[in-house]
Length: 498
Image (cartoon, rainbow, N blue to C red; front, side, top):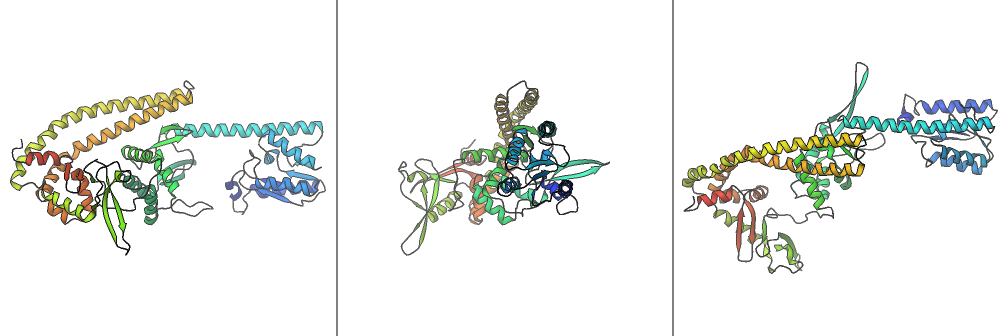
């Protein structure tokens, strides 16, 4: 009986032969050995792409079951390491074979039941174990060094492609952006960062857009599952970080997501880690209208009558647990009309425009100097935190600090850098376009009511989010709080404003 094994599927497919090169070579060597002993191969068990470091191999288990039921004289392997990669497994398999009355034969090693043969068998099993463990150590060392240098150990995640080419006969492996999928991933991060989408809804939309996983040798391209998308959104590789063995390293690949967007997505995922529901009832005023009494969000509630007619309302989120005194539901059509009327009350007259612009722009000019000072402080703190990250990695790889302390310190520095990055992005955004945003706001306020009533629901939602911090509604009450710069503009535009 013959047993043949290769460790990887690549080995099983190598060359032009259907079974690669190694399997036929082992099979032929085993058959020649059988003929030399005057035996015939009555059964053959071929293990394709299975490591010898585990006994959980289908063909190995079939072989051991086979020899329990059918008498055989010999179990032939090409080398001892084809049977097992550690001494304990080798001893267990050899004992099982010998218990059936069969002999284990190696085509390349002179093992036998004699004392010398057993000694050689033990030596070869030890060598196989040493080779396996040493190879694993060397591979891990090489992968760690690659990660330290900014490379990508193993397969790059979705949105990237592992490529290799030859430069002067030397193989060079790189990671490039997968243009087919990268745009979908950028969209997914940007969209989820708005806080308006669930992962489930996002996965459905990505499938509709044509986003799929990469096909493999034995797998087809498929739409991302919700679990797969969740893992994708948690992967720091997209912001330029390579994680190897729990340790983060700055990557040399192109980042798809800026650190601020990535941090925002993580905050939302963490806030929703106890589960999230897709928004079944959507409306462009959701997230803008709040309860006048308690300040909680108003949510959409649909009520169906006996004759099948559906009525839509806004109700206080706390209405369910009876903790809010505002019990009355607000018909959505009435809320829409009241918000439209509200836009008519915040209009700015044309003759006020120039004076208000001069007054309002004075504050951003003063704030600009303050922002610049803070940006310098942020740059210095970021530089210090990044230097501390490098020192921490050096200390960890020099075995100067234990792993648990290293991971705790790394998380602290990562949180600090994310906070600094968010603040920097906000200040730079404010510095870059605040004057233009004020002028755009002034343009809008000159005829806000017309612009809003003529807008689509998508644009209305954008206008509401841009202008209002919140609109607080009761059955007969309404109060609006405006974002900047609209609050300052309308204050300056009122009679008597300074």
